[in-house]
Length: 190
Image 1 (spheres, rainbow, N blue to C red):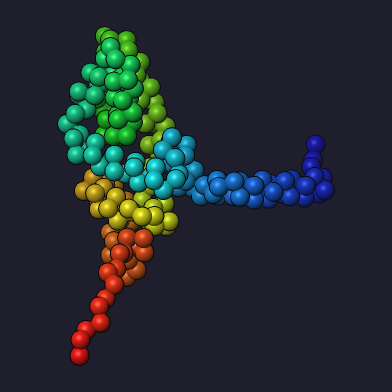
Image 2: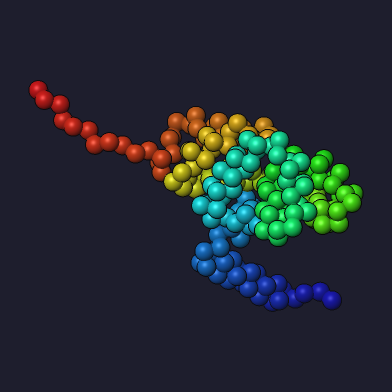
């Protein structure tokens, strides 16, 4: 059954209205691929959440040798510690996959189950570079704190496009307006 020209026009109007409603409701990520990817990954697309994600990822990657400890923590008796370990392994992402795959066969059923869940989630999102999406979004929006977040994350940038985006932003002719704090100049005495 073919859709009539009238129905097609009606659908276009409905989609246009929905897009306007999404944008007016503060959900500008509806048309933003980076924001959508960050939202789907559970990070959120608000500036503060994206900055927090990069800063937390920097801190975690600085201690990447803790992956075996985090795997053991997946079976901890304390539920909160198990949840924290899962969340941290998800933030580490692809770097944690080898250890997580091995843990999927652990004798402890809780460790095996949580490792499988983390593995599935990381593999699902591995096609998207969440750090790249975060960096691009911050560069475009330039919120306060972006320079600090980018500089802190730069040593842990795990792929070339992320590094290039950060370098281009930091070396651009236009400094990030939100980061520039100018002191008032005093007139010099003649």
